Amino acid sequence: MDAALLWKNLGLMALATLLGALVGLERERQGKSAGLRTHALVCLGSALITIVSIHGFGPVGPGLRDPARVAAQVVSGIGFLGAGTIMREGLSIRGLTTAASLWTTAGIGLAIGSGMVWPAVGATVLVQFVLVAMSRVERKYFPHGEAILRVNAIDRSGLLGEIATIVGKHGMNIVGTDINVDKENSIVAIDVIVAPSVVGRDALVAQAELLQHILNLPGVLKAEMERF
Image (tube, rainbow, N blue to C red):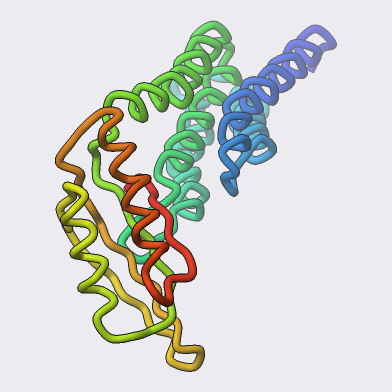
């Protein structure tokens, strides 16, 4: 490999690391397990594999070899890493957005490794738009989406019924429930999927009041609301 090609490939890998880190920065701020370093390494690794598949196995041409064969394995291989970020907690599934961002970051690395720098830069900008701007739009204009009410309390009879009554009084419908009891410590963890019947600021106020009333119930240790 001549010096010019060497420096070009080093530059592409450096750019891949930078763009991957930019995508991972938002995930890092959200406290996700796959954050800045993971995304940077995924993008760098994808770019490196693409560069190796183009320059590392001899001449390219009809009847010789297809440089896309090695790089194509990134697309399927990244699925295993993305699956590791998806977790089920009671009724909720976490990590889907992070898994999608990892998969997209791998695509950015493939684009850089094949020399398609501007499409990779454009994709990074669009990813940031989706993760940051669209997240704000969701929180502002779609607060009526299903949410999970998580309650930890001392186990006692009638608690679930009291929670259901409070949920109904605050204009929310119960979609599903999941209950886990720690019999040794007499602690119950209750997950309730709720669908608010109001939108906008009224929904946020209702959720805040709901949590306050839940926390006032006897034996309740913790109560929080999460987007589904």
